[in-house]
Length: 118
View 1 (spheres, rainbow, N blue to C red):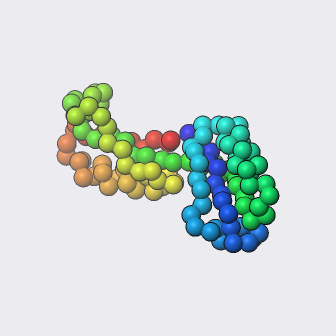
View 2 (spheres, rainbow, N blue to C red):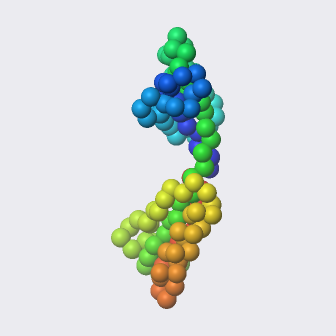
View 3 (cartoon, rainbow, N blue to C red):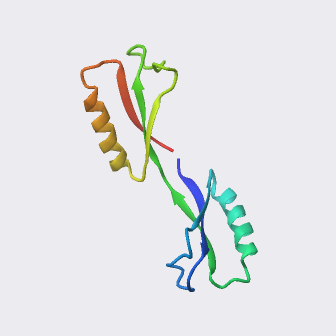
């Protein structure tokens, strides 16, 4: 599931490529419309500063989820909750992490990992 973030702040000049300090990152928002509301609020707060700018970015995250389960039905994780590894920016990066974890437990049939979006 894609998530939307409002990112920006004050920059050294109107090229907007060199922020003064860290850029502000607000979110995630589940819809573009929700992100747009926040963007509008932040943009209007800095409307008189030519070096301030905010933008909406759609970012996708991938996680590797799983671990050891009580049985091969993979319904009840040992300890009550699944492990979460990530986030990863691309499916390929998450798949590499999944492969590493899966191979570490290849001989134990109660371990299972999967890549999920969000």
